[in-house]
Length: 250
Ligand SMILES: Nc1nc2c(ncn2[C@@H]2O[C@H](COP(=O)(O)OP(=O)(O)OP(=O)(O)O)[C@@H](O)[C@H]2O)c(=O)[nH]1
Image (cartoon, rainbow, N blue to C red; front, side, top):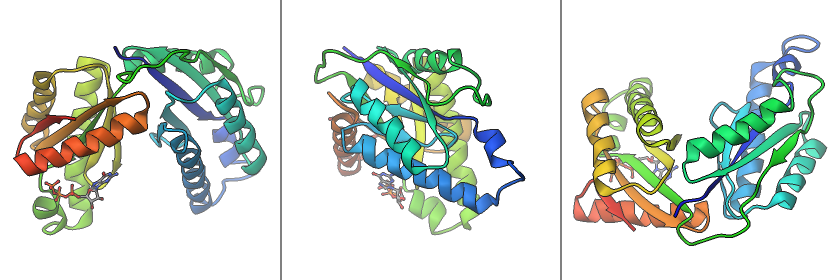
């Protein structure tokens, strides 16, 4: 089984705020965004969840293990400590993109991202039961990124290669499997997936090699929470390194 609980975190009325009463210093906005992400990562991560920064004004969290009360407290705490508030929508589905779609509709139904009337909207459903294979996480990594890029190219050209592979992977996984893939730094991409087979992961790796010329490998794990699944995936990725394989399951 798979039951992904996805939470959309959207900063309320952020666009207007960034230019009121006049445009705010860009590095101040970057500081705010990264601190908000860091706080969410700590709060959600301490409860076994994962959060991804995506566009920073909108962030996507996998919140299996967090209930309604956890979400309410998160929203209240952000509102108390930051000059902005966040709206939250939560959805549950076997297919991650469907859960996120539902979560998003709930936030959108409460008002526009740029409406001063919408503040701290909160709507969603929460898993009431859990199983040890609810969440499937795939941890993708570029083969020998250090030798191919980091130790040979300037940082910008390394970045272009990694981002090209990421763009190809995220689109393929979204379209073929309804999976959500997020760049998490270095040469790493973490994907929240339905229950996929070895061949389906090989299909993704082959596609990215053909399409972007980037060679990936992937470790896959499942668990009751994103942390459990993601941690198992990291071990599986170590197995790839050890065995010289491209796909390993924990
Ligand atoms: N977010 C995240 N980043 C990681 C992780 N492991 C490595 N990285 C990042 O990835 C970069 C490259 O490290 P590796 O992937 O180990 O190196 P590599 O040269 O690709 O070597 P192989 O993966 O063994 O082929 C590091 O500098 C980190 O930035 C991880 O578990 N999570």
